[in-house]
Image (cartoon, rainbow, N blue to C red; front, side):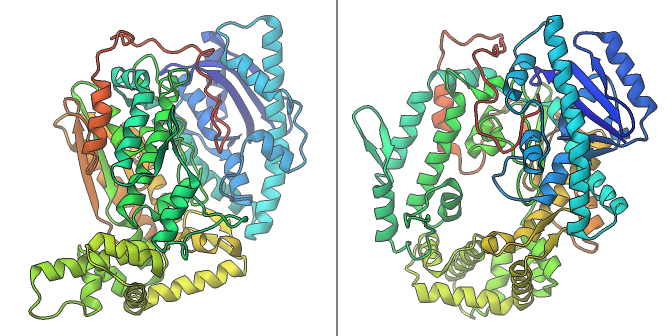
Length: 620
């Protein structure tokens, strides 16, 4: 096998600048290629890698090295990768953990010679267009150091993985190679980029503060969460806490170690569907966080946009414990509030089509649990009406209005259970969703009905609970895994379903790229491609790839897909986002002297790509 590390700059451009590449075999010394703006050396590196195509490439975050290989004209689909970052995740699959090369070395007691100066070296590489001989020597030593520790780290992690999963090293290498393929393939998506309306982006930047106030005032029209301090609006803890207590939600609401109510974004996401007031507060806080990416002094969106006007985010493969991507919402429109998708734009003559699996999680849960009743509900095409019918809620002589109300109750119950809601928060959600008063006892009865109708599913959940309490390994069919931990019982109960969804997405994306589709973004249970307007052949190919993923891992199961196409000539407006888009679009339409038709990329002194807090080390 070959241990590899690369350094490059201007990754937001279609043709980024490769700076250096280091290769090292198990029994040889490192070989450094300083290829910056040197076509001859780049071709030499290309030929060397082609000669050793059959040997696995051991890397840390395969997206980086794969992007370098694409730049010198190599077909990464013909290479095999062993990603040490993936190995580290499998050993310590914990949310919100730093999985950089440096932190992983520190965790395993491996000394990295650049522990104190890694940031300085990264800045040296990124911020210069030319390098002195002394700087070249420093970069070379830095690249070699990364490669040297990689060999030690691979050995430590492999030994630990073999012990944890109780398999042979040959089998574990096979698993890592499969999982690493997706990380490498995301380099193709990153290089493709996604079209973005730069003029709209820059106009939002110029009116960022006005936009923030506009959304805060919009929220206050529903409920006065924001208080004017004389210079700006603030959302105080006591105002939010008073709302929670006065609506009886404190019984279900999570608290901190000090007993205060949690109002972090994950908690707000979980409870935002409980009431219109919490929903608009959640949406407002998310939009305001998103607008921080349009800061005039440091726009993350502009910083990740190339000279060709296409946005190239780092997708953060395996960025969550379930193996899903974790692209930062500071520069990835699909991770922002859905209204920001109006900034996306296909090239002229092309369009963007997204294909997503419909109610994928219910289908997977039914398959994994072997619950025929739940699968029957999914296959009926209306899970909620089927649940109501199986529970005996529909009676002869009921009007259409009454049946609609019943369906809404069973829909809210199904979704609430999926969010992990208790009877108190579910009662409020049901009341708001149906427009009729629903008591806590009624909410509890509906939860019990779900447990009665879908007995096999709940028996399976109970089995998972036992497995987690015993701290046993949970795995998916594509070898992704996590160690059970009773402290995270609620989130781990849904881990097999979420991770299986991630597994399907990874396989479908790899197949789509192998078949030449221009994939521009993965998102949870959806894949977006750019294709010629009026030609739906690529869309049909994508749907076939997604169907193949399901049949490969879940034989006999069919998961519905839905498609949505967005033309170059139209504004992309997601369902329910009309008002949000109008507020943003009104700002974006404003003619401003600072906006020019020709986009000039930012210089690195103005835009610091690494200022934000990220879960993973960004590839340079």
